[in-house]
Image 1 (cartoon, rainbow, N blue to C red):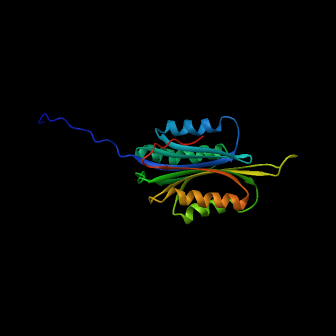
Image 2: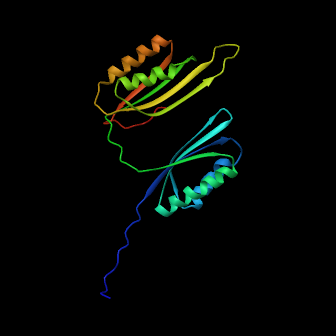
Image 3: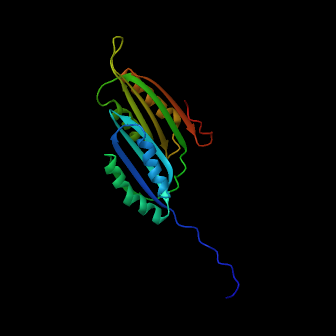
Length: 195
């Protein structure tokens, strides 16, 4: 023995994306997160949404190879017990490239088919990456037609003139008779997401 200290190498992190889909009931999210924790995994990011009478829970997990293998082998059994559809996929973590601009939009418009597509096409035609999209339809009532609310967060990989996307957004809102707001933040400004 030479008396040298042996430095332990940090364990390499492995990553897994999980989607759970099923009928909503009390305690179901807690049951899933408890299963993840009992396997030694960390929830790095997650989203939960109610869609009709179903809920969907998406998680991005990290852990050692053994932790990830354990959740891969035990969660499908727990999912079957809870009558959930479970989809899992190994992935990697990556540094997101710096984006010169972030755009947040909110839209309120009379609901009809193809509206979300019109707004996603707007961002695509300006080479912007959609990072988040949320939409909700409020049913028709005695005072007004069904209304669609859309919120989109997008990033621009190029240093485009903010006025160009703002003008195109307002033009589309006018064409669709929609009420909309847009906020463009350059990477040199702090990214305080509007409420």
